[in-house]
Length: 239
Image (cartoon, rainbow, N blue to C red; front, side, top):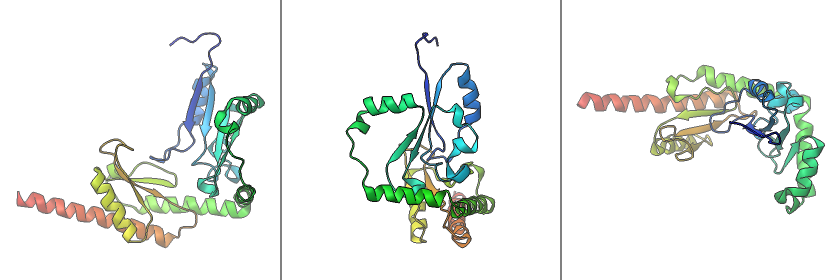
């Protein structure tokens, strides 16, 4: 593909993808884009608060702040509020203020909302924030190292977003209801939200979960798969 001298190329990625829980190879992407004089935009919605110094995101953790044109940091998810901020050069700020209609015509955030955001950042950037992030990573490791499932049923995520593949919408709903009945707020992800055959339950591990809760979650999931395997074997034996 050929681009004219005045062409601008923008590449948009997420810092952490919300369905599979995977992280893009940002360092490699940055190197590739150098050849095209392109601009990289990273949505840190799911990585904000979790990665990097003081929870500043995956771009910060990888030391790529000077190589990313713009970063979107939402105030939902880890910050438990709403709204967002875009970090970028002055020319981007000026452009958005003058041409971004959703920004120009949106309502100003309430003062209570701004206070909530500030309080979240104070916790996020404190020693308590460091402890919460360390505990989250510990819980993720406990979940992945203790859960025994066939390779195809557990997505290869090292993040707080863990996906258990149970092909078929009905199966995803069934497992989610079993988990909910056991006290775990886990939702089914059905097609066409994800491709057919990749239906799943989406687990979001929180920093304030306990090791006991994680091990209990594992037990319920493994019991579900053992029961399905037993039913499958019974059906085969009748043939």
